[in-house]
Image (cartoon, rainbow, N blue to C red; front, side, top):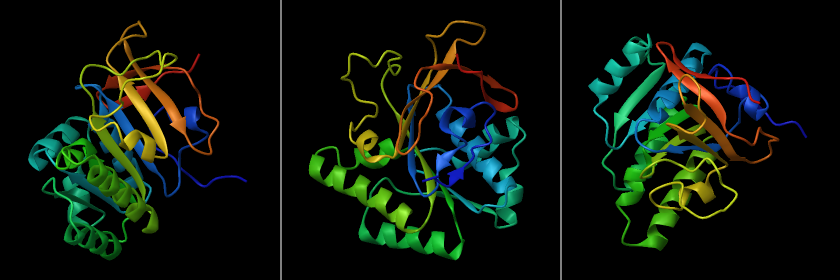
Length: 233
């Protein structure tokens, strides 16, 4: 059975995943500092706004003015679309509670939101780092809520160092909490080095449910227009 897809619009990436993320899925974008995770998420969101989708960006740690400035460097005028009520940027305290989920539900329903970015889910998880069961439950609840609300979501997560390009040996967490990668429908890792070539950056789709995706790492570059994924193979 064919799956409805949500194209990212990121040059070269959608060919790796049969046309886009599965609709109403939660997708984890993970890697070390400076690998381009937030840039990928912003680029995806900007492309979806241009496609007529209402979008929500949730940050637990970034300065919103700083995000807007970084986006403008790529030519992405989010503040214009925010004034037109085509997107929303909100900062949450990194603590989850029933009132937080209720507030988020109201925002999504009232704003007719279909695309959600959370940057980064690692900060939310840190609020429960002394209670593994609570952490897993709250991450699962967040994913379930977004799916019930018919949203396609990207979560970013940061790990110490760089994600391994060779995953054949197994082991090693792909997020600080080591949980969200098992809950998410897909896991995409971003790398500062390892492929060689002009940019020496790479991206890899480790898993994507209901998708025959390209398995190996693929070179990518960061340009003045955002991320560009090179041809696989």
